[in-house]
Figure 1 (tube, rainbow, N blue to C red):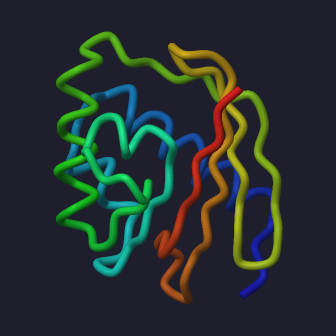
Figure 2 (tube, one colour):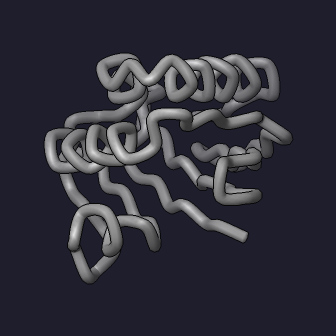
Length: 118
């Protein structure tokens, strides 16, 4: 599945807007049911030492807790990079600069993601 810059920018803007709205259903709408997420914050917030969660429900619980802990959460999109079946979103977060690599399935929903923080 080829991704073009126009799709990538629209997807990224919609995803950042979903986060900034603090609407969990809107955030989760970008993920497949089998979604897998890896982040250094998962161990801290979800108590999962591996740093990886599997399944939209488990990731949803983690995301809900993160939104609760950070009521003023706001992201600013800085750059969108396009790969093969993947995007990298580079953004400013409350903790500093961050990047997420998002792998998309044929339905253009995120199947796997890995977050990185400065």
